[in-house]
Image (cartoon, rainbow, N blue to C red; front, top):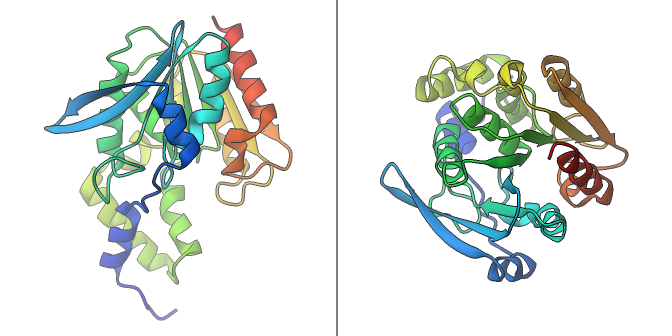
Length: 260
C-alpha cells in the first residue's frame, strides 16, 4: 500500500481532540450544579458537583464532553447520590486542542482527591480507560462501572486504520511514536484488561451489541481479567447511545445500590 498520510500527521491526529461544545440541555444541567476548579501541573481544570449522599464520579469518553453522562447522573441525583462531572482536558469547554492519557489521569486523580470517600466511578469509553489507569495510581472507590471500554491501549492505535489508509508498518511507526511520548509501559499502564487484574472492588461492565466503534468482544476480554466483575450486553445499543439507554441506566443504579 502506498502511503498517502505522513506518520507525523497520524501522531498529531491521535492526540488531537475534536471539540464538542456543551448543548443547551447540558448547560441547563450544569446551572443546577456547583462549579469548582483544581490546579494540576500549573493548569486549572473545572469540575461540577450536585446532590448529596454517596459520591459518584462520572468520566466521559474521547471526543465527547460531560454532557454525555448527564442522563446517568440525573438518575443518580434522583436516588440521592452526589454526582461529580468534568470535561476532560481539551474536551467540551475545557481549554486546549489536544491531550494525552497522562494529563487526563492526573486530572481525574486531582478531582477524586477532593472526594476521599468515593462510592463509585462510572467511565464511558476512554473515560473507563483513563479512570482505570488512575486506579493503578491511587484512585479508589467502592465500585467501578465500565461502559463500552476498549480492552487494550493497542486497540486505539489499530483503530486509526479505520480512518486513514495505513499499512501495518506505518501502524507500528505510530505505535513507536506514541510509546516515545508516553513511555515504554504505555501498552500495559493504560490497558484496562491489564489494570483490572489488580482491581479488588465490584465491577460492572456494560457494552452494546451494536457497538461498531469498540466491538463487544472488548467487554468479554475485560471481564475475563477482572475478578469480581459482571458483564451486561445491551441489545441494539451502539457506542454512543448506550449512555442514555434506560436499561444501562437501570443496571447502573441497581448495581450501585447493591454495593452501598
